[in-house]
Amino acid sequence: MKLRLDAGTEDLLRALTPQVLGAVARRYRDFAAAEDAVQEALLVAYEQWPRQGRPDNPKAWLITVASRRFTDHLRAEIARRRRESSVLAQAAPDELVVPAPDSAHVVEQDDTLLLLFMCCHPALSQASAIALTLRAVGGLTTAEIANAFLVPEATMAQRISRAKQSIRQSKIALQMPTAGERAARLDAVLQVLYLVFSEGYTSSVGGSLQRQDLSNEAIRLTRAAHRLLPDEGEVAGLLALMLLTDARRHARTGPNGELIPLDEQDRSRWNRALIDEGIALVSATLPKGAIGPYQLQAAIAAVHDEATSADETDWPQILALYTVLKRLSGNPMVSLNHAVATAMVHGPHAGLDLVAKLDDDARVAGHYRLDAVRGHLLERAGDREAAARYYRAAAGKTTSTPERNYLIAKAARTAS
Image (cartoon, rainbow, N blue to C red; front, side, top):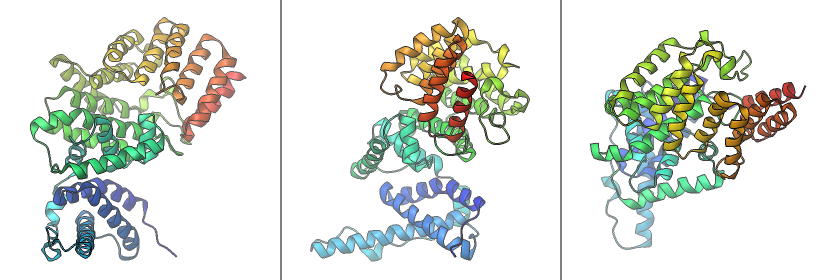
């Protein structure tokens, strides 16, 4: 009988994977080969740890095993080339010595933020860098990343593969960028963190609405980025947005994991400490100068969190903020949220007119949220039959079980 790791150890391995990959990639300057070596080390851990127990220093153990696998593959490659050619390789096999990691150093140093900036590589387009980082740092599957980008899974798999190949061919050192390089890569880094948090807060696939491990890791890394770049308003804005959104986590699901929408949540279950911290960040960053998309989204989240009930929500202020955000962003989901805010201020038909304009946007035309929002606005407009039809259409398109169940229930209640 094959033994399995306990849930706590699996969570630990997930958290350690980007740290180990960052350390191995930084040491050997080959991202793709380092990723292969780390995956092999994880397989060894899954095989050995249930029988032999978890090592005292799991991170050092994984780095050592991954390093050995890396050099084993490198020796094999050198031997293969020597058999095929009489030209000597640049490095002889006996020159490759794997140092045992210093356990204390490994425990104290977290290479995840390093890996985050490394993956947002100048050899890559921003879209490719973000996709690769979501895979390496966020641990998202290719299907989850494709869903975030609104593209087919096969397209995303090719994009990630090309990104790894581009890094390998570029010969640019994989290391923490300088201050100037960090600034150039910051937009991509922040988008990665935002997408990891979003996938954790509302999982796009599976039976659970939320993946707390992802959202917690995104918050942890964004805190680290804020410490590294304390004067960057968008870093502070993103951290505030995460805190203000995550504050509602415990009120978003019922006893059986069912989705509870914002306007029906028990606001006494919201985390006031996170809300206070998020509002403080927003208040500190907004007056400092240029305002970016994450600061605006944080301000919107703050307006929601400050309302003691759904009826007291300041929708005119939210609409004003979404109007500015829409000018800054070409994201169709921002336009969809702007349509909802418009409906809350000017009535459902005004919102439906804006939703109709998104039917021609290929990025969102087939997305379940477009149908769900249209169903919601039709219900508010009194067209219950059409609303139920769009709720059912949305339910058929989502890959999230809690969201599907919620939409099916909405369709049934609306049609009755």
